[in-house]
Length: 393
Image (cartoon, rainbow, N blue to C red; front, side, top):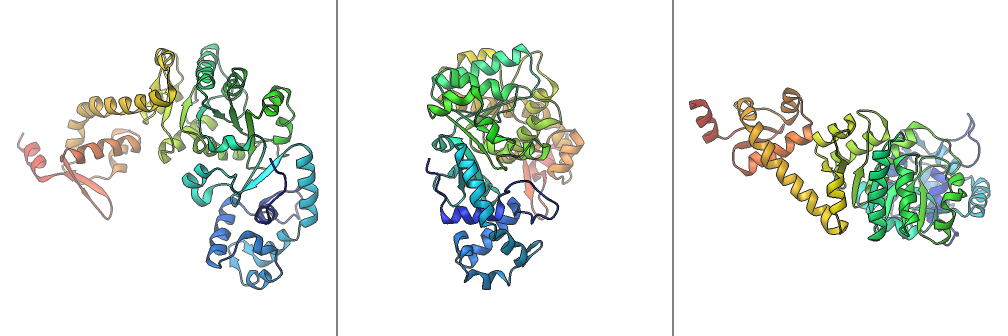
């Protein structure tokens, strides 16, 4: 990949990048949300990020004030040209590249799914074109048993054989097993790392795949940054939004990055979420299934001869079965509550259900003309005919 930075990327890197050791007196680079606001402001001014490098832009910048984005802060960040040059030289000497939201190489699926909350900058090494090809996200906890490892290797091997990229977080356990299995079987992989991209770039386990351009390792964080929980949680959404489908091999309940990323995806509905199901699955897996994830067991996995066709079909079949079977069982209880107006939240709290599942059943009831939807605020009640029948029983 061409290591020469576009003027836009230079400007974005000056605004958002960290160069060298942090100090208490360092002018803090813009966060993702701060840069999102600045990007909107630039559009309103008919300007591009590179225009901020021109002396004429200083006049407009001096009138800028938004929370912590002051003119003085922006000017200080833009004046870091020498530090930028040294940092970029060090990164490129290690084989790293940098892309910004203004570059054509930046994955469009991230822009579409995340909008202004997509990271302004990605650092990476390897085949950048893999970022746009989608694939299967495989994620799970760091602590795994042999059942989880076997399941992970099986689905990663199938993906490699069917030319579907594995996308994961590069952490030990499920993430690493999935990526390395795909690479060992001639497949491709994308690792979205939360820390130390420069160290991963020279790791022996990735060397051959990087040389053969079958792997991309990327991070939206400083390539030298060490591990912290905030970065690990933040990168989860990028694993899902770069993918077409996702599989959770194992998850703790209400803790850890796997749980946080899976529940975030269920809420945002970026991609269909499959969860490994067996008699020994952990509580996290069980609860994700209750919240709307799609079960997949070893028997189903072995029967998948065409992931591109069968994963979507499995998703549709599972959703139909859930909607039909459980709806018929729970609806009499919902009827009792919906004699009076209720919101989704009220029903979820009353029945101790996830609000997403309540929403699915209410939508089905609307389609069957069992209830009415009222607005401002949104709430639901039995329609007149259903209420009359229910009250006369």
